[in-house]
Length: 347
Image 1 (tube, rainbow, N blue to C red):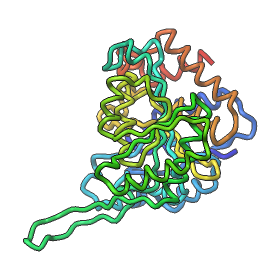
Image 2 (image 1 turned 90 degrees about the vertical axis):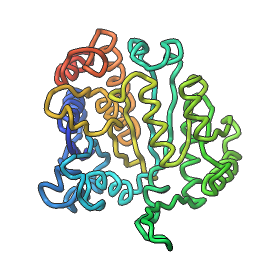
Image 3 (image 1 turned 180 degrees about the vertical axis):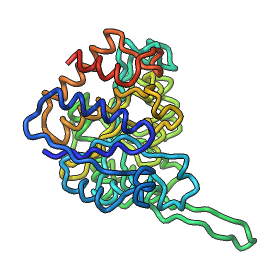
């Protein structure tokens, strides 16, 4: 079993190192690693955010453990050379279309949420976000209007096959949880969303055991604050899912706690924390590695078929928090390595 390690930029190397320590502690037979450069680190080294050598490692790997990309030094580059193109390129080249972002409050952290503890404590949801289409992959560019004004454009589009496969992913996730799926769109104003809703309804015929509801994205954003406990699984498009999953992260207390998986049709996946590269704290030992450690647990569960080991990691994170482990984003003073030590001690 080959894991590609792509630490990337900012705090990426620090947090991936802690996740690897936890994986090593499990002593899984046959687990091997290969490193690769991505993002700004890759651009500075070889002139491209996703070098061919890195892509080769990714294609051969059973799973990818990814840190973060984003470097202010690269902000002025042409768009195709910016660090973020690494993650978009991997999604495209590997067909990674189904992004799973769980959000669940650890009881010890309910008071860290921006919501009332009794509201935050009800959060136990999964956002299934389509990640291979929408405005991020549609035609885009700049042009001049007839009256001489500069105009930027990004085309939002989905075809029915793209919607159908992510709808199946959403229904299957709901079937494995509490049997409720909320499809989020903007069908009242967007033709793309109308197609989305129509296809999701068609797919629902295959899942009579799953209760399907629909919600406009603006209402969904409000409901995540008002009554987040109503949600089990949310399935939505790339743009809406990007925004709602970040909102969900603050509802549970810290963006440093949320893991994610992005899968293709064969089960190969890219696993990463959702928080980004945080260049303002890079190298200072302040980064919370728990989202990356929890991403490693998702990797064991979804791509490597090792659910027992995944359970061990998740239980160790819960125990470490129950024992008082807190990084600065959680109101504590433990550094990145000390947070890793706390999880290892709890394994």
